[in-house]
Image: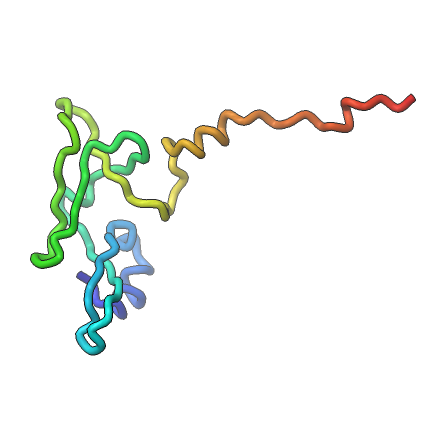
Length: 118
């Protein structure tokens, strides 16, 4: 887990920030909940994102400071392992339903071309 100050001053300014997970914690001074980031290294940093076809799920083990990954279905040999990165992506989500709809929408005709002036 990253100290919130270190996260803002250092990690958010690097590519490492793209490999962090939101991590809830309790402020030791106030006892109030707050959020920081956890850096996920090893195989956990290798999963790609999919909005519609995730085959790996994950849970936070707050007590032990771990992220636990589990297959959501049988995974075929050679199949890419995908998780959800969440709703706030830093890239265009190619398999998002809304992204596909935007690509399929044709430009509307100019309404003025439909009227003839007599």
